[in-house]
Image 1 (cartoon, rainbow, N blue to C red):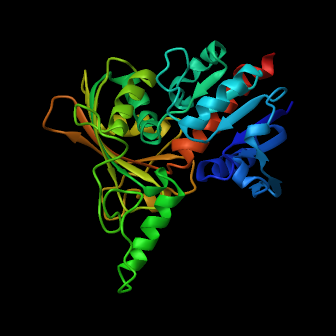
Image 2: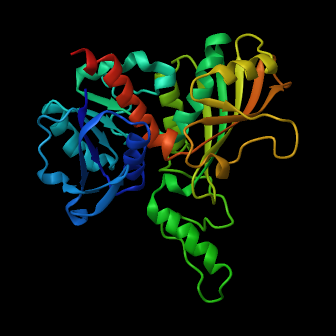
Length: 340
C-alpha cells in the first residue's frame, strides 16, 4: 500500500533532503507533491531518479493526501499546517512552532516512538530541534540503564542549520580572506563566521540563555524524561554541514565507560567509533550524508561520582531534520495508517 505525500518547502535545504531520504529509504509513495512558495513555482527538484516540478503551496488542496512533511518557517507553518491537518492530512512539522504544545507529540523514533498515538489530538507531529535530536539518541539508551540526573552540553553547530544564506556567507567570507578587497561583512550572523566561532544561536532570553539552548532543555525533558536537568551552551562554528556536541552526563548510579560503550553500540541509530588514538573518533566532515549519530571519546568523568563524557556528531540536515521527519512518517505508517 502506498501513500500520497507532500513535501512542503521542497526547494530548501531540508526539503530537498526530505525528498532524497524518502527515495533512499523507499518510503511507500504512490503520489508526491513538492510544494513551495509562489516565487519558486515550477522549480525542478529531484526525487530519486525522477524530476518533480514544485506546486504553489498557497493554492494546494491537502484533501485526500495522507502525510505532509513541513520544512518551512514557523510563520508559514502557522498558516498552512492547520489547513492540512483539518483536511485529514497528517502534518510532520520541522519548525519549532508545535514542539512545546502538550497536545502535540515531539518524536525521535529511537527514543519515544510510542508517543505517535498523540498525533490524533491535532493531526500534527513535531520534529525536534537538530541539536536535541542527535543528543537524545545517545542519552535514551544510557538513561534506561542508569537514570540520568543532569546533562551539561556544549554544541558546535554548522552553518547549514541557519540555511543557504549562511552557507553562502561562510563560503564568501572564507574566499574573501585570501583576496584583498573582497572581504565580506557579516549579514546573516552578528559577527564574522569564517575562521571564528559565535556563542550565540537564536535570540537571547531574559536569563541570558539563547533560545537554542532553551530548546535543548525543554525538548530533552519532553522526549526522554522531565526529571533530567539540562544546561547547554550552543555555538555556531565555521563548518558547512554536521553538528557536534561535547556531552557530560551525571547518572543516579555508576555506569562504567566500557558498559556505556557496549550499550551505545547496540542502540538504534548510533554508531560508536571510539579508539584512543589519533583519528580514532568522528568529525563533522565524516558524518555528512549518513543516517547515523556517531559517538566517540566515551570516558569516565572523575570529578563526580557517576559521570561520563562523550562526543556526539551527526548530519544536522539528516538526523537533525529530514531523516527524523521521514522516520516519524515510517512509524506513523507502520503503527497507525497501515492498520486503518
